Amino acid sequence: MTVFCDSTILAKFDELIRNGDSRRTKGCAYSFVAGKIFPSPQPNSLIQKGIIDWTIHAEKEWPGEEVYEVCPGELVTLRTREIVNMPIDVCGIWNQTDALSRKGLLLVNISTVPPGYQGHLTCTFVNFGMSRVRIQPGTRVAKLMFLSLDCATSSPSKPWETQVYDSSMSAMASEFPATFLGISEQSRKLEELVATGVSKIASATENLKLDAIKQLNASMDDACANFKASATSDTRSVVLKAFPLALTAILFLAIAQWGATKILTENVEAVSKARADQIEEKIDKQLDSVRSKPVFVYSGSEESKALLERMKALEDQIRVLEAEAKTK
Image (cartoon, rainbow, N blue to C red; front, top):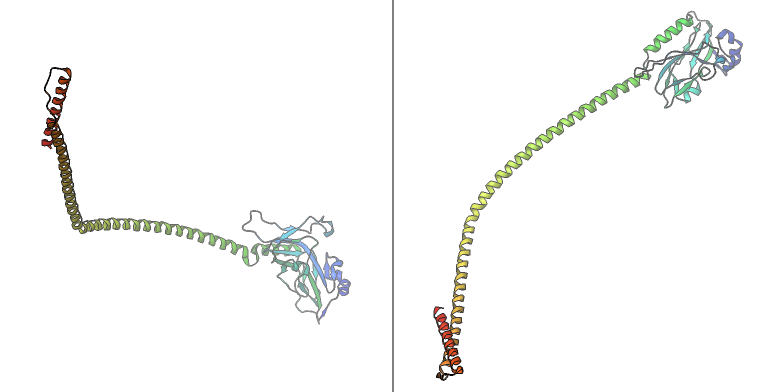
């Protein structure tokens, strides 16, 4: 088995490849470009990507604005612009390009092109990167190595017409998930499950809160009732226990009040008696002083008349003082 070099490929180029550009032959392979793109259906998108056909114009006639962006995780199928014609004694190896692989766009249908095959080739890409990868009409999407067999095959592959091939690619792409291994669908389902679970947890939490509040209120009511009953019982018990002590205190206060009243009365009587004795002693002294004075006889003069009236007033005053002393 021998691998064709670039000079061998170029020597047999018209025999091996149709609608191709010999300038894309390098080393031991020829690089193919995209002809049609068959996007996978997008179940969560309102805008579905349609089939993109870059074969309606020659490759050189595209202005350069045409582009298809492969989103992260997206699965997309495209078929080549070129048609390959494999001799019955030649096979090919369908392989990845370094330029796209460095961007995270990987060819997942690396395979062998059988001897005798005639038709377009398919690229099934998955974007494993974190950014969108741009594909344009002139983007080299995959490369083919040609290997010479030791003899011609006895069961060559059948040829594929372009229309039949495109119909097959379209049907196959429509069955593909939007993302590799259905990650987007699984992610969406997981998000729905998470949302449902969060909703259920929130509802259960709210119910638990309500139950907890009800239980707390019931516990508080029971505690208040128990406290009231205990307080009433404790109050009665305290009153009964304190009654003898209170009675003793009342008796003690009554006795103390009686004693204080008696002492105060005795003191008042003693003070009154002492005051009366002082007044009586003062009156006696005044009487003694009056009795010891000479008696004046009225002589008919004004001085005698005034003196007699004064003595009479003194006697009246003495009688009043004696009456008050007797009363006290």
